[in-house]
Image (cartoon, rainbow, N blue to C red):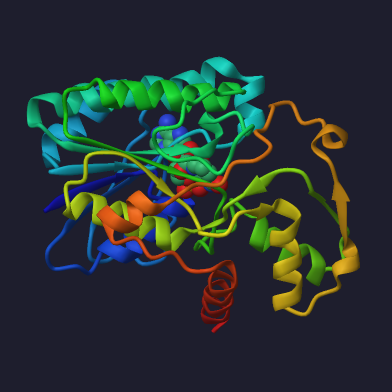
Length: 302
Ligand SMILES: NC(=O)c1ccc[n+]([C@@H]2O[C@H](COP(=O)([O-])OP(=O)(O)OC[C@H]3O[C@@H](n4cnc5c(N)ncnc54)[C@H](OP(=O)(O)O)[C@@H]3O)[C@@H](O)[C@H]2O)c1
């Protein structure tokens, strides 16, 4: 099976490259904006592909004719999306249209990444059939792109996920686990939200769900996250406990006090029974995930 991954420099993208690059049953084409930032560059093909360049997107897809595309690339900074709606619209919706149009003659299975933010956070944890009600530009863009995928006529899968954490080869993008660890180790105070509930997701678990969706040709929407739903501040507490760091540097703050540009849903979290049943999904606990992060950080220091 030939799989093309978009956004291969991103957190999920890098995990997909590592999980797929040496598999004998899969030919991997990794694509990203700019240079390849993944350290290991053997065992797969890499193509620079800025998805906003429609003719280049068509050319690359026609050239490789993938059986499946795992579309991880997106403008993921929620506040940046709020402040620059046209760029968000182009990168999160427009480019999905370009990809789908290029895939249509080939019948490519399209696997699309989406978010818990499609929900308003009034009634989490959510199952796949619950009604979305996006509250921000980013959230609306992800829901709009879901709709494009569903109406494309192609075989499709939408994998919605929540707060992804993990280690990448470059330090360009942090996440709550690394940010908490690094800040507390440097003796920096951090303020962390108390009243937003989430199910943190280990990047490797999400990558495995993408791969299973591809191999099983799964169809429809799937909710993919960790099993535990907790206030975001508890993720930071768990990190501090695990690494025996000083919790007093973690200062609570409410959503109202933080007053970020984009509105966030308060209580999300997912019911993941469908993914367990149909994708064989087996997420790690947050503690196990932090342990995996620790092992990876140690290996990078060698
Ligand atoms: N991270 C989360 O907590 C979270 C939660 C819910 C859902 N999701 C969804 O899950 C998916 C993967 O997230 P992630 O954490 O892996 O994101 P990420 O680390 O921010 O990676 C996204 C990648 O997309 C690339 N990209 C953006 N615009 C592009 C374009 N026009 N052409 C080519 N590449 C482009 C970025 O390139 P550069 O590196 O060059 O900027 C980046 O490498 C996304 O669809 C996101 O919306 C993420």
